[in-house]
Length: 161
Ligand code: ADP
Image 1 (cartoon, rainbow, N blue to C red):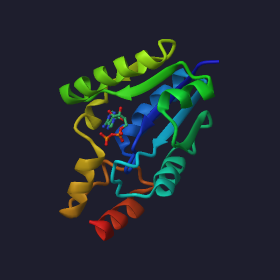
Image 2 (image 1 turned 30 degrees about the vertical axis):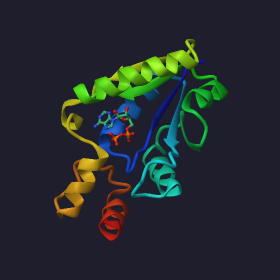
Image 3 (image 1 turned 45 degrees about the vertical axis):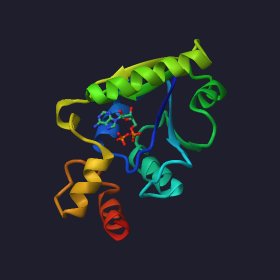
Image 4 (image 1 turned 90 degrees about the vertical axis):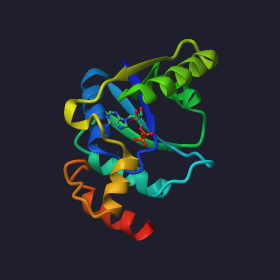
């Protein structure tokens, strides 16, 4: 069985993330979306909210499982029997970060590989932080966020800004 892990903050999940998930769900038998819990990072949404939004927007994909985990991502992948980590690659900044992360993960477990996917054209410039900034300035973000979470995400970001 082909299994992969797609880790991220998803604060909140965007159409760019969802596009990656829909594409990998066609290729892998099981996809584990790992919502990171990083005590050193400040999130806008709580862990439970990030998980709940992810579950909502992926409910149509029966082979996608969403979880929170405090453990090291590589250990989580091992536990699930997943040999592939999925990452999105938008630009050079992502490339630098992902290359380092790839080497680090390989040094822990050389059996687990990383596959990167490019965004589709309409998601190329999308990041959760840009979406949050746009919401604070009252811009329309309906093209960037999945419709199932749009109202909740916009309201919550405005309340917590
Ligand atoms: P970010 O805060 O940069 O959106 P996340 O940790 O939530 O980062 O992202 C998880 C993964 O999804 C990362 O590999 C990131 O590069 C990727 N990603 C983020 N936005 C997009 C997008 N618009 N298109 C494709 N991949 C993306």
